[in-house]
Image 1 (cartoon, rainbow, N blue to C red):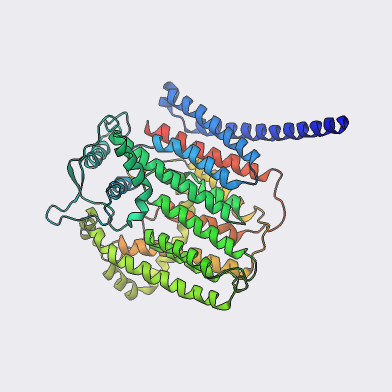
Image 2: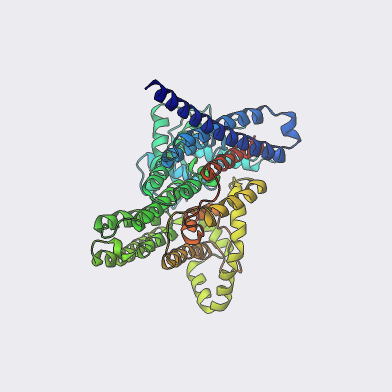
Amino acid sequence: MKLRDTSDFQLKLKNLLLEVWDVKFFALLFIGFLTVYVFSLFKVHNYLYPKGEIFLLVVVTLLGISCITYYSKRKDQLHRVALVIILSFGLISVFLTPMVDVLDEREHFIRAEMTSRGVIFPEYNYTTKTYPTIKSVQDVEKALRDAAGRQTQTHLTVFNTNLDTQQIDYSRGAVGSAFVQNPFFGYLAPAIGIDIAKGLDLNVAWMLWLGRLCNLLMYALVCAYAIKKSPIFKIQLLAVACLPLAIYYAASTSIDAMINSFALLIIAYFFYMYKSPDSSLDWKHLLIFFSLCLICGFCKVTYMALSLLILVVPITKFKLKRYYLAGGLGIVGVLLLTLSWTSYVLPLSMNSWRGNSYLIRGVNSTQQVKYIMAHPAKTGVMFLNILDYIPLKFQQLFDFSLTTSVYTSRFLAFFYSIYFALLTFLYPSHTRITKKSRIGTFLVVALIFFGTYLVQYLSWEPVGAATVVGVFSHYLIPLLALLPFTFGLNQENELVENQDMWVVTLMVAFLAGMLILTLVNCY
C-alpha cells in the first residue's frame, strides 16, 4: 500500500514538474515577444524617461504569466479563461486609454449618461439645435475639443485635465449630438456604471471610468457565455473575443461592446444548433436565436444578416420540418423589424453635427440609390474593388484612438495576421463541415462585409463617390469568428504539440503590446 502511494506521489510530482516546465517555457516566450516589441516601439523620450513604461511592462508581464498559468490549470474551461483574460487586460485599458479617446466615445458617453437618467429617446431642441444634458457632460465635451486643438498633446488624460478632481455638476447643460439613432438598451451597461459614480458622489472622471468598467464586464460575461455555449471552435471564439481592438472598444462606453459580444453569442448559438443532436431543435431555439439577431440588428443594421445562418443548420436537427420552415419566417421578421427601426431612426441622425456635414459634402441616401441604379456597372466594379481593402482591414486591427491622433503598430498587425491565418486555415477543428454549410456561411460573411460598405456608401459618402471610406475594422470583428468554420482545412489532425498554449501565449502578448502602445503614444 505504501509503495503504491509512493508511486502515485512520484507520478503526480512528475506530471506537475512537466506542467510547470511547459508554463515556464511559454512564459519565457511571452516575455521574449514583449521585449522585442518594446525595443521596436521605444523612441528617445521613452529611453530617457522610462518609469511609466517599466512599471507597465512589469504589470503586463505578471498579468500575462498569470493568465498563461491559469489557462494551464483550466484547459477544459475556456469560458473562464476568456473571462480572466478580458477582465485582466481590459481593466488596465479602462484607466489607461485616454478619456473619450475611442472613436465617437464622446457621443457614446453622452448617450450613456442620458440613459442613466432614464432618457430612452433624447429630445432635440430645434431652436437651439441641442440636446439637454447635465453640465458635467458638457464639460467633458469641451475638454475633448480643447485637447484636440492643442499642438503638443491631443490625447485627453488625467495629466492635462481636471476632470478627475471636478465634482459632478447636475445643473443644466446642452450638447449638439447624442447618438439618438442608437437604441437605448445598447447603453444600459455603461449607464449602470455612471449611475454608480453618481450614487457614490464621485468626480466626473469616474462617471467615464465606471461606465467603461460596466461595459467591459458586460462584454466579458457575454463572450464567456458564448464560448461556453459553443461545442466547436472554442479556441477561435476565444481569440476573437480577446482581440486587442475588441477589448479596446469593450473597455470604453461605446455601443460596439454590445454589438461585438452579442454577435459572437449569435455565432456561438449557431455552432450549438449546428452540432445539436438530430430532432432536438424546436421553436424555443428559434425564439432565442432570432431575438439575439434582432437585438444585434437594432444596434448595427448589417448584423441582422446573421439570422440567415439558420438556413445553414441541417434540417435534420429540427424536431419537425415546420420548425425549419419557420426559420424562413423568422428571417423575414428580423429583416422587416430591423429595416423599420432603421428607417425611423436614421433621419434623426440629421439632428446633430452630421446634418450640416451631409449638406456640405452632398450626402443624400435617396439620390445615392438613384445614382447606383443609373450606373450599375460603375458602382458594381467599385464594390468588387473593395476586396482589395481586406489586407488593409487586418492592418487596421491595431489602429487605435481614431477620435484624435491615430496610433498604430504595424509590427503587431503583421504578426497578428499570420497568427489568425493559422487559426483560420490550419487549426484542427475536429469537426466535419459540409461543403454546403461552408458555402452558406461564406455567403453570410460576404453579405455582411459588402453590406457594411453599402450602408456606409449610402449614409456617409457624397452622391456619386468613387470610393467608400470610413468602414473601420472594428465594424467587422465578429466576422472573424465565422472564418474558421468557412475556410478551416484541418478537420482532424493535430497541428503541433501544445498548440493551445501557443495560441493563448500569443493572445496575451498581443494584448500586452496594445497596452504598451497606448502608454508610449498617449503619455
